[in-house]
Picture 1 (cartoon, rainbow, N blue to C red):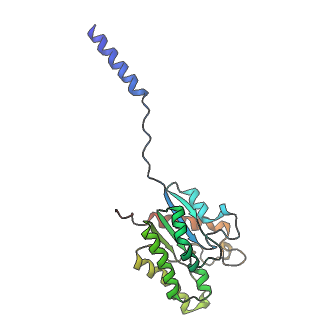
Picture 2: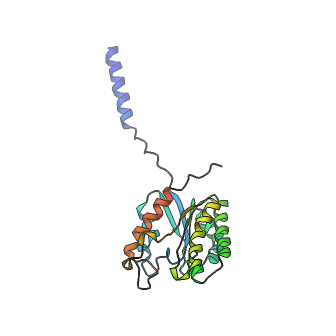
Picture 3: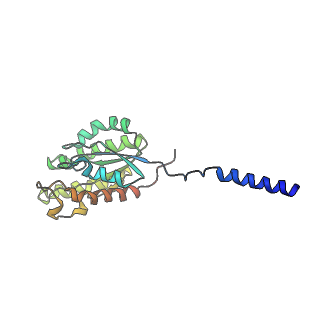
Length: 210
């Protein structure tokens, strides 16, 4: 009789355990990525969902992108806006893609560096890691073009950011990847840029513990 009662008790316990739902696997928290850029990140000439930022957001469950890019933006404009954008997005990572419009206007590189450095400093002070997307000017800009692109690498090394030396490098010089203005990438080129940025984000060093 006691054996039967013991057996019935184990059956009841087993049924109760099977009825308890299994806990869902713990997943890493989605990281917020603020993109502060110009027309290259604002999907110029395209629908917003065709741009690289929207594509990267759709492809990666690890990151949630907030696009604060504005066509025609300069590094000075980004410097003026960054505090408000940081407060709005509260990002874990800030991607800075600015400087092309400055370079085309011949802005002194010291001023470009000061503006980028300010933005990087503000982002890091807010606890965000930074990815700097370097840009390239047409070769007819001569020595200025070479120093312009080199400045991104130097700034990144000095201030401890991730750096993509030339954001549009995956497109090469193939005309098919660019719109009629020969400056802005086509819709077909955007997935290449999205993948490049996602790889660079994955390669960022982990955040420092406080």
